[in-house]
Amino acid sequence: MLSGFDGLRFSHWHPEIRDDGVVVLSLDRQDSSVNAMSQDVLLEPDGAIEPPMDGLRASSSQHHPPRPSAGF
Image (cartoon, rainbow, N blue to C red; front, top):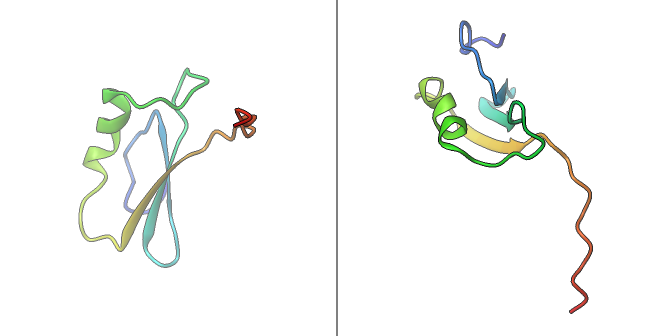
């Protein structure tokens, strides 16, 4: 586990601390093929996010192919 996240268990988020101090949280919702937001997903990192930090970036770790254009 990453320093600063010792002892924390995440079901939906995967933390990474960059060299510049920015925390990157990648969302990969457990038991779901879609990374939809839910109360559980939003509340999970609450205890882990506390000052001091230089920045926070959250992103989806599931990569989907681009959707076809609607033809407009």
